[in-house]
Every structure is written in structure tokens, then in C-alpha cells.
Length: 135
Image 1 (cartoon, rainbow, N blue to C red):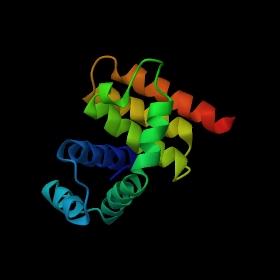
Image 2 (cartoon, rainbow, N blue to C red):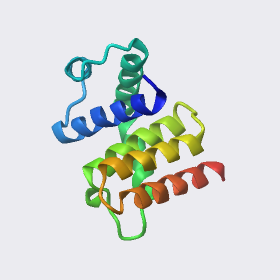
Image 3 (cartoon, one colour):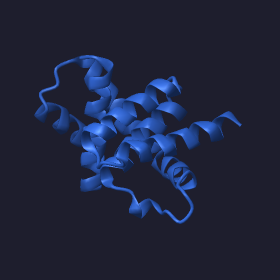
């Protein structure tokens, strides 16, 4: 399974958890089994992302809130966009992945799953996050 596919799989899991409001080991395993993911690296990647976002959710949510345009609140963000932002911010901040690759793939996922304006929104928030981290 290639890298973008693993990220897309992780996004799908995060999205499902945003809707269900639960994130446990058994939920991750059930998701991966239902998706028939056999690739060990892909399974471990999704588990790591799920665990990392769960452990750092408060901080990741705070980063999102801090980088929204004036007058916006996190409640106004679609569940799809929120899941994409959480995945991307986790990878940029905690996994130290190259931010250009992460932003590009997050925008591509937003184009595929989000609304018409999702890709521009995701790009703007993530660009603000990166700029803040480089100061």
C-alpha cells in the first residue's frame, strides 16, 4: 500500500471516529478488519495515527482553533475538514513529516472527500500552522 493510501485510510478512520465520538484499540482493529487491510505497515500506521491523535487531541484542537480566521469557531468546520486537519497537524507536529508533502496530500484528500471550498480551507489553516511553527 502506498503512502497516500495509508493517509487516506487514516483519514477515513479519523472521520469515522469524529462521528462516533470514540477511539479505542478495538475500534481501530474493527475498522481495519472491515476495510480488509492486510498490509502490516498500513495497519501500524493507522494505529499510530489513531493513538497519537487520541493522546494529543486537546492540543491539536487548540492548534486548529488558534489558526482559524477571525470569527470562526471549530464547531463551524465540517467533520471531513476537521478529520483532515487533525491528521495533517498530528503528522507535522508529532511525526515531524515534511510539511509540504503533508499539506499537498491533505489538500488532495480534501478535494476528494470535502466540499468545494474544503481544499482551500485546509490549505489555508495548514499554511498558518506551518508559518506559526517556523517563527
